[in-house]
Amino acid sequence: MGIEGPEAGGKDIVSKIASFKNMIENMKAAFSNVSIFATTLRQVISANCHLWGAIMLEGDKCHVAEPREIAVLDRIGGGDGFVGGMLYAILRGWEPEKWIQFGWASGALAVTMLTDYAQPADEDQIWSIWQGNARVKR
Image (tube, rainbow, N blue to C red; front, top):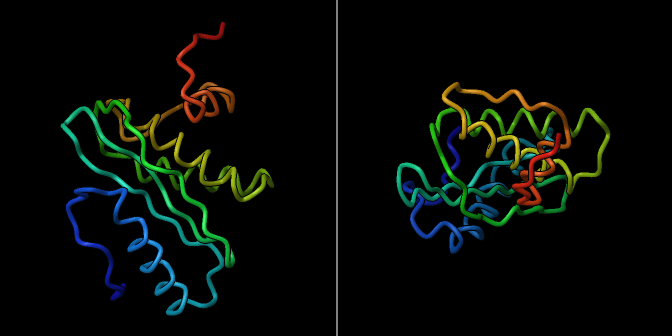
């Protein structure tokens, strides 16, 4: 898209959040007809352990899901899961803060699957992931 972003590689991702905010501001300037911009933040600690976060600009308000450690089985599909979760939350009419949270958790779920997508049982499963709840509900 011709917009320069933070250095690739995902090292020390937390310290680069300001760079991602700057990149998104540049995207907003270049694509002024778009009202929501978002991207995931990923730092690979090992093949099966990543720091996973996200940043979103909605209007003039920036929302950040700070990177936290997640277990990874297959990293492919995390970004798509993030976008799918965000779109679901937007279409449900939730508050913007919930968009990034639901997207973050949907992407985190996707990377725990051998497929490139996740099939959550319901919204509660996604919210449990966001809350870090490992309890089983039956």
